[in-house]
Image 1 (cartoon, rainbow, N blue to C red):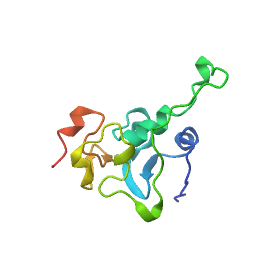
Image 2: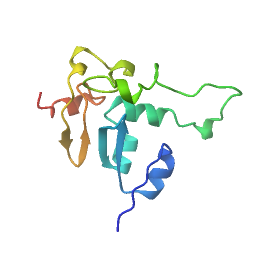
Image 3: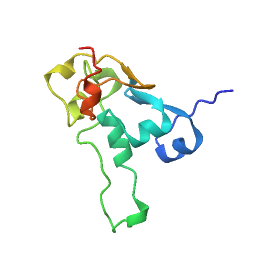
Image 4: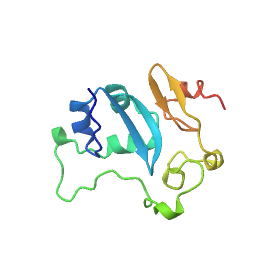
Length: 126
C-alpha cells in the first residue's frame, strides 16, 4: 500500500516515509530514500528546506530569523526557463538556463547542473 503525503514539514516526512521527492514550482529536483535526501541533499533547494528547520536543541533567540533563500517564488504564469530555482539559487550559473537532466546514483536522484556534493558531479552526463 502507498500513501502520498504532500508537505513542507520535512521532519514529519522523515518520520512517516521511506522515500521522498522534493519539488520546486512543479519541477522534481531531488528524490531518494528519505534519510539519504534529508541528511545529504544534493540540490540547493533541498538543502534550503533542511537548513530552514529550527534547531530546538540549541534554542532559538527572540525574533531570530530563520534561514530562507533570497528572492521570491515565481508566479506560475511566469516560471523561469531551465532550472526553476535558478533566479533564487546560490549555486546558479549560465548553464542553469537549460533544464538540468536527472542524475541517478545509488537510488538517489537529483536534477542540478551544480550539485552540492562535488563527487556526485562526476555522475552528471552533461
